Image (tube, rainbow, N blue to C red):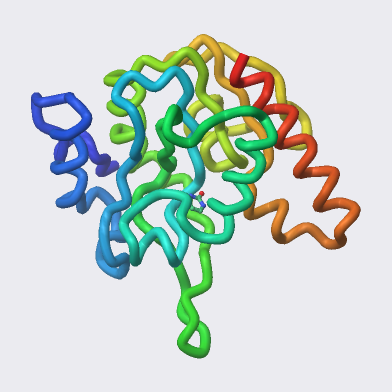
Length: 202
Ligand code: URA
């Protein structure tokens, strides 16, 4: 299967990776997305947070976590005592996947083939940064880094060792919290996200 590997040059530093990722055509998502949204943050970040894929706002602005999910993540990080400027934020899939409905672009979950195709970018980011801790937000990021069978409901908040980082932990995706049925559930999930981010921060 096609992966991003053939778009990655021998230059494996983050600025080179970012530049190369702009031309990635490893899967079909580049055809409809506005641009590649690469990770952002300090080159020596101790904490990397991995989301699923850019959303509508991220696709337009070109930066990760600048939309509604990003706002919730920001609140949770603040509650957990984490400053955004210290964190490298990225996604398992670097192009926005959507379906059009009445002029609106609705998020569509990336397929396992797309996650697999995009993983070399995430691996290269982690290899360049070598963070102490990786937080996977939601099942897509967790399945990319921890394993295909990973379930947030079963293994949320547990520190696991992966090929890429000795401290890898998965928690709720902020979008899952925004989608939760009622306010009670939303606030419970947000507390769990804050709790897990606090563990991640050490
Ligand atoms: N959701 C994600 O998973 N990543 C983003 O960058 C924005 C929203």
